[in-house]
Length: 179
Image (tube, rainbow, N blue to C red; front, side, top):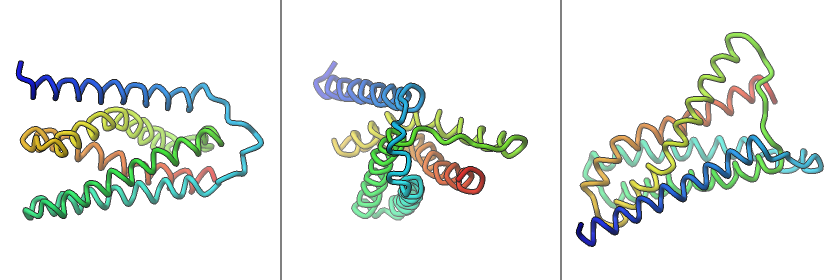
């Protein structure tokens, strides 16, 4: 195995390990952690901010795809970096919100609840998949491994876009029915 292959393998294993720790922390935060009641009215704008950050990420992803198809690599890099930053800010805001407020339950029953839970389940499952894929795709781009970057990005892009868009949809449904 060459040094470059060993370096890539180590980096990808590190990304997978970091992703596993982050996902385990999020599961603990959502399903074990009890949000303190005294903070229940603090930072109530965070769900809306999270939706905006997801929407901005989705927008940057689409613009970035358009730009790379036009051969504008520098502009593509700028928009994909912006998408990554918006998603990263979302993750921080999401963690703060759930640490302070816990989970928001969807209060309705019937067809709309089924639709909401289906969207939420796919959003959660694909976000688990997206995290290591996004980090690995960025690693390949930043380390100049553009062939590997391009191959993985073909799978990463639609998953990341779906997670970003469904994050906005989940917020909109909660806003319409729960808040």
